[in-house]
Length: 342
Ligand code: DAH
Image (cartoon, rainbow, N blue to C red; front, top):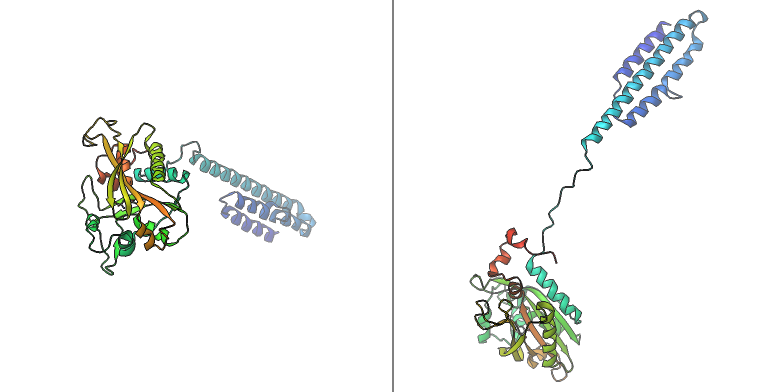
């Protein structure tokens, strides 16, 4: 009997010290002490060993122990419930989420994407080439041999490790790379970044973006070039914009032309943007020079083609009336966030 008493005493201590922090631990507590194979049940089984004259006393003790355990379990249950209710209260699920600023597309990217999608509708696919180019692809193959005066207009940055390498001055070098694959007919546009050794100002920068266009097949004519560019201008600037071609010179095309559109600002009346002429130049173009085709191993007697090159910054400035080229690369969010995510 004494032994039973001290045993119960020990169990009470252990139970009082039990740590129950969550629903799982509460259930473990219940199974351990109040379950069908738990402590209370097994200790009740001890009754049979108690001599008959002390059964009443032992019965009382055990009953009291059982009530103690049950009461303690109830206390613990209440504590766990309040704790989880508190935790739920701490999170207000109705609060709005933390907004993540997703930013806006860069104006150059917006215009780049529009140009690409217009030409894709005409069946042009996109080709890309390296920004670090060799002299041959950037100049020589395009009919600009060493010491050719036209190279002066396109001074660039050279890689000191290998003077044959330079930062490409135009995307026309991608024409050459694609023509060398001789997978004809060829109908591509080549968008990308180009570099020039220029003093930075509102109208010039040491890097900018161009889109080159190239179509090589049998019987391609200047009429195809004009029609393609007409379509592009109407899609890009709207139905009412007028177009004119002026004869020009590029070593890699013959004949060559520059294309102007009627000024978007004054509608052709004459203003400061169009220098009072009513026209703004937007691209250079022409029929691919036969020796450029030959340089790439294409039979210039069988194939002809047209090419054009335009500056994305220039078109973006016209569309959005941006007056200073430097704004595109200064990363000033006040400027950049004004453009929609189109
Ligand atoms: N590559 C010329 C430039 O950067 C632009 C150009 C003019 C590209 C005429 C052409 C073209 O393909 O036919 O100034």
